[in-house]
Amino acid sequence: MIKQINRIVKLGIKEDMPFAVQKRIKIANTTSLIVFVIAFVFLYPALTLDTSTNIYESLLNKVILVSNFAFPFFSLYSNHKGFTNLGRSLIMFLGLLVATFFPIMYGKTTGSEYYFISVLVGSLLMLDSKVSSYTMFSICFISMLGVVHHINNYPPIVEREPRIFMLYMNIIFTILIVFGLLSVFKNEHVNYERTIELKNQELKTYQEELHASNEMLNEKNKQMTDSIMYAKRIQTAMLPSRDDFGRVLPQSFVFFSPKDIVSGDFYWCASLDDKMFIAVADCTGHGVPGAFMSMLGGSIMHQIVSEMKIFAPSQILKFLDTRIRTYLTVNENSVMKDGMEMSLVAIDLKAKKIHFASSNRSFVLIRNNELTEYKGDKIYIGSDVNKDPQFTEQIIETLPDDTCYMYSDGFTDQFDAANEKKLGSKKLKQFLVTLQEFPFETHESKVREMFNTFKGSTEQVDDVTLLGFKLY
Image (cartoon, rainbow, N blue to C red; front, top):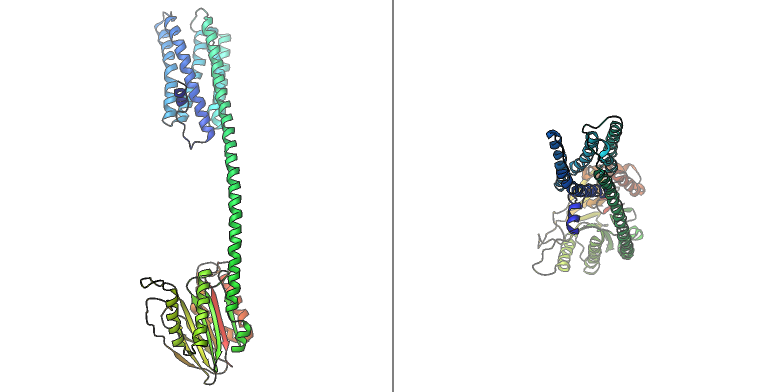
């Protein structure tokens, strides 16, 4: 029985409803159940004690009696179907109807005017908005004043003997309805407080777990950052220093800007037998994966030139390609996707010539403010697309005051401050020509300033390397 009552009280309630709406629906359903009880209690007296000889009066009494069953039924049904505002309005309208009709009809003998109290309380507890609550409260209050005025100053429409039983029963039921309204309101408020307390406890537990997880993540992040910083020191140690470049090429600079802590770009230089070797490479990816590739590439370059004594740039790139594929191939059926692009020059100081070979990168020479671009082969070092790549070697005659540049695609791929357009190869080459107006010693700072100004607050998209040098 209790379970059935609880099911009826919860008609129309959904879990995703706000607590306040659920509370008002429960109050309306509880009131409907109480009205059902009242209707059943009054059913027998209404049928047996109705001694009216007026057919219309008798019919009207029965209509009111039927309404006492119909209104709460349709109120519960409306709530069940989701029309909760209609359901609450029906039960309040019934209370207003009974509290108004019977006193005007029979005077003070019924005590029905006391139901105004339950309607006044219900208007404050059942309705959603303040406007609707205050409006209903005002209508009910004005109606109550009108009814009280009428029964105190005018005779009833139907004169009959006072029925003390009916008077006491209506007073008792009024108290019962008000008690039911306030009890549900209080119980729901207590349940809400318990729910909030449980949620706060769950939230506190979650926050403690989250704090512990954050502490662990911070520790892991610190360990990872420390490891990457150590990798940066290793990578920096493997890259040529300014002194190394100064010994190979006194007039030279490198603008080197990793996207992350470590870089997938690398630059390399060596000097053997009156020849100087300079390379700029861009490995697959950036960050830690690119850094591993860059360190592998620099190590292989040292083996090929310093140990194997291979000096022709085209042959150096061919050997580099073979070694990269050998080191990174897991098995015969694996597909090789990692590798690098590289621009490589071998400078013959005696012959005053530059031997150039490249994988997808260009070499730029500026002479008398005219720029010449030497493009490399469209071969990706380490790729499985070309199993036996043949690199083209270009020989470039040099003159005094020639200025040379090599760079990775991170420079040209960078988006501007508005994050709309890339710098592009054309703008970079125009900028390099304008650099010739300034002393070579200022080129590095000019390049850095230009890149940072163009980039603005836009995120750097890739590792960036630009190397410049003059031979005489």
